[in-house]
Length: 382
Ligand code: CAA
Image (cartoon, rainbow, N blue to C red; front, side, top):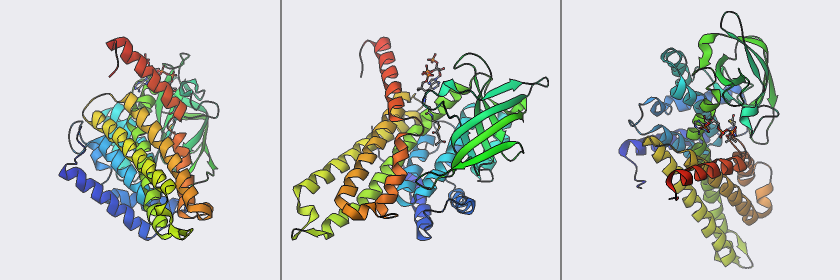
């Protein structure tokens, strides 16, 4: 396995860093406004950073490579841009995997060029980890369309999004009774409630009451919704791992000079073995997370299934990033808990990463199931 980047991969990474640093120069970190969101989305679009997602499999720099590179560098230099990139990608990927040619033609260009803000509405108040237990229902009408009724909760971009992939129940079977719908959120009849999180992130509820959806807006086939959700998350979960790596690097970028400059008991903090050992552990965690995340993206971009790798990458990188933020804050002392100080902001940004797109325990379930399957099929593992 070779992580040497091709020229075009290097160029993509350089552009992400340039866009991120330009945004950082006019830092509006805490601004959750739609204007800020759109300005950041425009910058991502101007850098053509969604374009690699459109390439045919096996061509270009790789869809997964693009996702992990953008998420890592945005998280390091401008976390809000990471969020904007991730949510748009979450709407784009299901179209790429399951959209028919008309749906791709209609919806991919406005998502790629930032004219539509997208979202992915799977979770409900009582259906988070057990995603296939969702109860939002889609009833068939005489003209072949559907009426959506129910509430989606913890949906990123709910207050501001234009277009959502909404997962709803079309049948009795727990998994095969779930379908995916393309929903225009600018049509009247949807109630949108905002939930305020600790870190800036537009999120909330979408409430439907007999909301009409045309039959042409079913993504994939009826009953394929759960598969669509899971297959999309396979691609996107390593992106959460990359976000964790970028956040960890940002913490280290800050704490290394701090340990060299801060004098305690007449010596710089960096001269103490307890600090040195913490730094060594943190760096090793970041590098290990990078191996898992890059390996996963490489497998996926090479056309191989990456379900187990996606879960390992997401679980490990996000858990370790939370540990890294804890350790950096310990080293930083009281400064690290001052509201809006660098590490305090990063701690707020990183905590949800072990929860969204599948909690750490969900990743463990997936890893164990895949492991058992591999063992049954091959009689041994690795
Ligand atoms: N790819 C394709 N299809 C898949 C799949 C995958 N990786 N995993 C499952 N499926 C399909 C298959 O058809 C499978 O049937 P087979 O076993 O016969 O192949 C079927 O789904 C059922 O799979 P499971 O038995 O594994 O289903 P389950 O009900 O036991 O659920 C789970 C498994 C892993 C716990 C799943 O419910 C899950 O991932 N839960 C977490 C949900 C989640 O990540 N939510 C995040 C929401 S999005 C978000 O957070 C973004 C945001 O807005 C911030």
